[in-house]
Image (cartoon, rainbow, N blue to C red; front, top):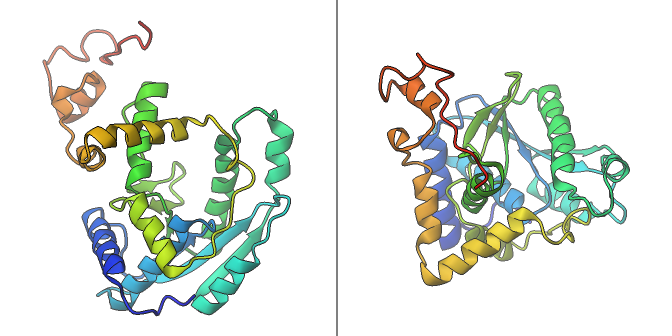
Length: 276
């Protein structure tokens, strides 16, 4: 389905949020060529359409390249996505690399595939961006993903971090942006229904139960029943950090906070035991 449909009330709302995120975090610059990672899920379709709308009216010029990876999963049928891309009429690439066999070979049947699959896909994605001359990679993670990742890291890894809106890769070759960071999953689900995106299922990990993210998602849902604004409050907290009220003395040193004796004795890295 073409992105040239009339702008709906919902789309206007999402465009406002995406535009604000791009401006607030300096995501897109004049002359950027952006690879949009298109998984075939609702979020990545929405990302591509919204960026295309903004590109038409933006005061700067930038290009979009839709990029989809066929990972060799049994029963995979990407034809609905390809037909949709043909109708979209923008530049697109369908890459093919069998990561499915690698994941199945490396992990046991009861293992969670997401982490390894994600790492393999990321490496292919980074190389593709360089080969296509893209200066940025746009991913479809939204505000709910950011909140869930924050809680997952706090509860399961003992770290206070989430998905950044803008990130330079460790080797400095790639810059990753997340323009949907201020949008909610329910809005993107409604948008997907409104635009009738041809969603491709993930048969590799979509059927796995007991994933940490699903547990955290359910937890937030239960909390939201009692406190309807809690999701928005947690997302807002990510932009309202008070470093002096945290316990990472290494962060204090970076920002010139805390007593002068920090760093003069020991490592200067305050750490509390994760176990009781």
